Structures are given as structure tokens and as C-alpha cells.
Length: 301
Image (cartoon, rainbow, N blue to C red; front, side, top):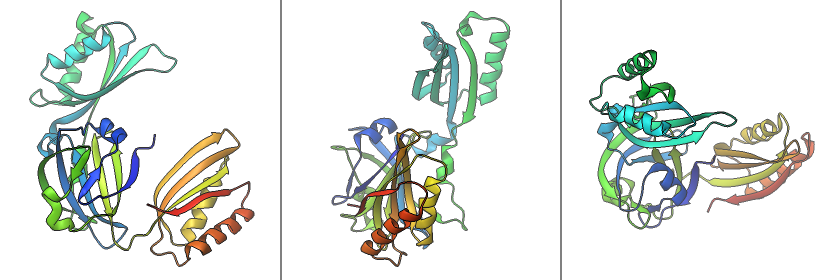
């Protein structure tokens, strides 16, 4: 699943794609918590803003819980009761039926809060199962691991990322987040700037990357053979031209025959003009194994 979108700033506002905002729980009228990071001179990034529906102080108690349950009526209710009765708050969650199986898998982002350590819940569940307690009869097993959302905010002196500010919550209005409210003095004039929005589905956060003025983004769409090594041939040639890839998205169109390869790349250090790049790439295709076709090569708008 493609969990990112390229866009541009309008004034000081970023329009958050409905698909991404729905996935992340960043919704109209809701408070959005944020943190601004700055990057060093290496790479194409200038700034990055992390957006979340949760305050930063909550990250330490957030936990990923996966429950495997029988595919029968009442199993999800039983699992919810198991967690709720122990003071564990279910936050974002998604359940799905196992393919070709008879189980339901429920992935939960939970706030343990004052419920104690993760192993306490596992020990309690194990004791109930061993005693054949009917309160867990529909739950097969449970997996728990730290959400570790705080990893995004860890910075060190020798790393490329520096935390510049933690902003107060800003309300999302008309599907747009106004960067100037908390960060206008740092970001300055960002009207028309290219941005990359990435949804971190596992952490329920969104990253908004602002590129450096020197960054030159191009979109490259190629149709390639659906066979081992075809992507490698394209990426090797592009790397030789000192082009830095920002995103790679591939998708099979006809199995064992063709697939699409969508690239967004920074051409700032490439010595070729756009016309030269296009001509050289098409010449390189003629020497590759299989049929390669350049479908689109444009400046990212």
C-alpha cells in the first residue's frame, strides 16, 4: 500500500490528503500535536514536522497488542473486556479475518497507563487460559510489544536530525494544517514549497518533509519486465548519474510480463539536463534485458 503523497504548500498551509488523514486519525476539528526537526547539510531534507493525534507525553505508555481470536460471535467483545477490565485503554485498532483461516486478528494500539507492565497482562492471560476460564475461551493467544513511538524523537549530537521545537496543539481546519501558527518564525516563507507527507501506519503518525531550496525533484514512470533484476538494472543506471531517490513504488501490471516502476528523485547533483537524461535513459533501455519504456519524466509539480 502506498502510504505517502507529494504535495505543495499553499501560503503556510498544507492540505492533508483525506486518505492519509483518515488512516492517521488526524481529522477535521481535531487537535494535532507536532514536533519540528531540522536536518544538517547532507541530503535533500531541510525540515521535518511530525504530526500526531496524541500528545508527546503519551508515547511512553503506548503499546502494540495483537489478539488472535476464534472467528465466532462475541470474540472481539471478549477481548475488549479483557483489556478494559484491567484499565487498558484501546485507542486505534484494526481487525481482520485471517485469509484461509478460522481466526480473527485484532491489532490494537493501547495505552497501558496505570495498568502495569506488558508481561503482567501476558501472565494474567496465561493463568486464565490454563484454568480454562470462560472469560478468555474465545481468545487463542496474545502478542504484546512496545509501540516505541518515541524512537522518532530520539536525537543525538552526531546524528543528522535535531529537535527544534515541540508545538502546542493546532486544530485542523478545512482539511489543512497551518504551519505558521507554531513554526512560522523558523520555516519562514514556505509558499509553493514541495513537501512529502508519509503516514507511519504502525505508529499512527505523519511526517511532513520540507526539502532544501537546492533540491530538484523529478518524477520518473517506467514500464519494466516483471522478472528478477529488472528493477536493479534501472536503479543501478540512475545511481551512476548521481541521482538521489526519494521514493520508489513498483506494482505488477501483468504477472510475469510487465510492471510499473514509479520513482521520485532529487536531480540536484546530476550533471545531465532533462533532455539529456531522457535520451540517455532511453538509450540505456535498449541495452537492458527485456522491454523497458519511459512513460513519464516530469518536474514534480
